[in-house]
Length: 271
Image (cartoon, rainbow, N blue to C red; front, side, top):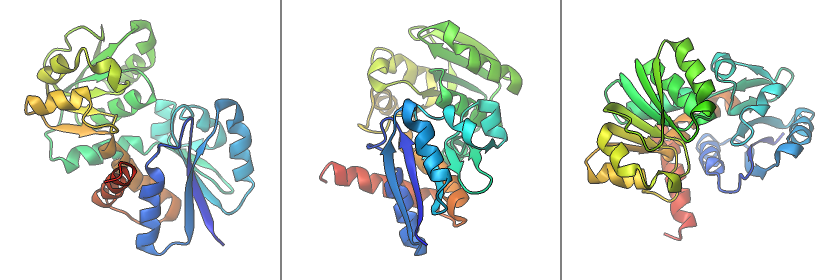
């Protein structure tokens, strides 16, 4: 029986996950298919329930804006429960929800051979920001600055930091984050342009969740100042390693996942 998987989001057509997973299937000789599905929030319930009833479906990668809503369709693992957001739904008789963004960020960080971060600044307050916070806490983070447009909307990140024993300070986007080991951005690249140079100068390394187009203003500022710069491809590849294994039971490597994503980006650009 052909096994099926896919990525669901709104939108999802831009996702590089199909390229990553299909490359993994080819490497292991698996008769699987993987496609991208753009599904509006109002249609998510019907979309998932249709696949819960179809034994050919193994799982779904889940991206914005569905990472919180997906918890209604399976038993969450501990990181997912703690974050209130997941990115992987395993289907079958007992569906489960997982968050591979957390180990994925750790894997990407270590792949770049960076020192353990004790201090960090995170720009944004959504599900990705919380995932990065949990990952950084596992790497030894002690102090966090959260940069947001509206401090009242940072409550979830602040609450999580308290649970993790990380001291947190909430500041406005235009404020100085202070010297930090890493600054991670989770908001659209255009919104970072006025602050990118100052943010890069304040950090020993930067991470921008955006990868297309690259470099982003923050990535370019990091390069100009000689800072190591991770981007969304690193996180995408890192999280795909665990996601692929959860769905198939087979193993793929970080470098192979990142190479598949880069190849697809070049194909789309006509290079």
